[in-house]
Image (tube, rainbow over all chains, first blue to last red; front, side, top):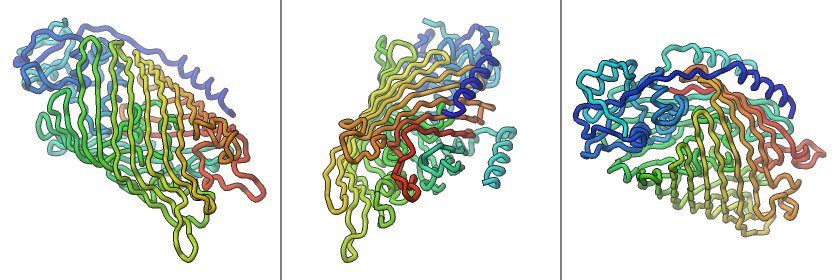
Length: 142
Length: 408
């Protein structure tokens, strides 16, 4: 294959130039006060944020919120969803472009997330451990 | 060509720097879309377009509207157009449009024009920004039957069943019919292009009587591992005709039914994707070769192994190896006269691809394919020069692809 060698060398060069940056941070799962649970499993968090669980145990609908491309968001995805930010974004775009779902609504900061969760029935989201929580509920992880 | 290149470069520059690239929401209706422009260049043979000379006739555009009416009811539609060589020609089509009522997590119903499940990626095959590769492996996602396998008019049920410690099961069961364009679809082109009576072909007619599709995907307890199986069957009349005696028409090729079965396995761990899929298809059709009617019951199959790795937020690398066989009873093309030369029986493809995410919305990809074999290449795209035999340039050839895609 002509140019194959050059192509492979080019790809290896790019590979060497790049190095992923990993940062760690504690995450809290928060809900609106009307959500009928006080603890949640990692598996259920994953199902909710992948759109596979849409109803709380009391039959009310789940409204979930994500964050913009922040360290909190990346840490949450890695810890609970087991997907990279790019994989998660593509997962939801696949749902949108096949008609199976909508891009989750996202917040720009901890304060914005807390405000949305507090004002939306059945809402669930996540913030960094240092966030000021106001009236929202923190779920413990089973 | 120079003018096209200039226009495309201007367009790409605009997209790369534009700061207003966001999805919109108007009166509760969310609006998304994608637009892509590609360039194809091949050695030796033409692959679905005039690729030997290099071509920009390779693009897709889609606009998508969705509105949630209640917590359980969602309406959406997507209009789409594309161009690939002589097909598509950017005619606007309704890609999908359906109402989705989710009764509970394990049961929902959909009605309208719905994307058909076939393998893991058929429902999003036209949006290349959703994967690492530009071309999905031709073994499981052949361009030749793209339009036929794309969607169906009808309805069905779906759901996600929680199996506790055993993971979860997603299912879809759909039934209906399909509307496939008589002129501009890949199937119509396939019917026309398969004929060696190239100059006298009259027309193609495609009527799908009914079809159904079943899909099961098991999200296993091993995080990131999912196993899938899809089956679909289509009863149709897909016919190409040639002039007969005294002004009549004779059928040249007449498909009756097509059945596809796909088995899939995908594993995602952190930034690594591993995937493998196998397809087996059965075609029942009649061929009229110089007045000799042949009933054919043909079985084809193919498989691929693929991988992709996200190196950084903006750079991803991927590769796959794919094999596609036109007749499982004659994989090497040596025992049937219909494969002349014998490499018309198979298409083996080693693909290496790179993906650059310039920003959240704009992606550029560069891809190379080393092919062995000429299955899936059409005679009408590869008419030999005087004195040369058909497909006489050997079985090894290459395809280079560049593509820029903008999604919002």
